[in-house]
Length: 372
Image (cartoon, rainbow, N blue to C red):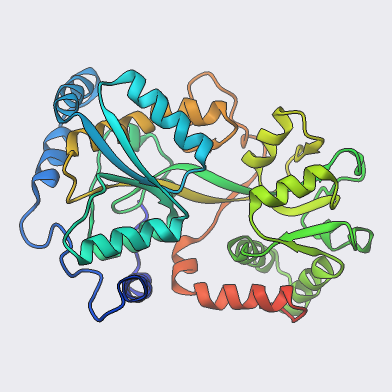
């Protein structure tokens, strides 16, 4: 199981404090007013009781208690289409009303931090990106979650107080009207080929992809000079796009031929809708960054929160898989889209410890500097 290192905890504590100060406009710490200090909360006691159950017994007990609560407060950064599908299917399955706060991952973190500071935490469960979940873990507001579905998630997706549900997978994609199957990039190094000058796009905030690829090349024995040269050649002639969905829209319209690091699920969804885009066969290796959920210690509806967690790791996995997402648990009988490619998971602890370093290096690269 992955847990915060001591240095990682310190780094995220600093990050969380900065979020609270920025969001609340005053002195204080992220742990001020945090649920769960000292004795376990009522929600934690409930989670522990339910953790002893499994199978049908656990589901029936959770459904009975959750439907008595009648509602669930979900804070999430899932895309609007996935959020809508999750909300619809969960409410169809159970007599529970979901109240959703959906925003960017940093806004989700800020809102929870503000509410914790003001002793007015409203969320029962949060589903968002790894760095924000690591920060919430360090704030001490997330409860431990245990169960047979969590045990089915790979070790790389089991963190101290949160669990991966899906992965954003980075891979090059290309416009099939402009790039033939033979010409499409077969390796990350091929993106440095001068033939892509003026035909390639990079995403403005993909410093996590930049870090992961940098680390991979280091492990392959490339020198810092060689890595800088490769990234510099990739950057030369590339245009910068902001946002993966917007980049995919421009990609589909033919604004550029190749996107260096789009999310495969976005390209897959566009492809299914008839867009002239592809990303298969995948460039080996792919880089995957976890997204997941955490249960709040202060949850007013702990039964609904835990039922939602179990559901998200079972029926929810099928729902997301059917929509092209790379899920933490491949549904039984389905083909694993990552089966024939090496998957390297973004080192979230390194990213949390040194996010400024990697972000600054990537921005320097985009502005014409040398990168790392």
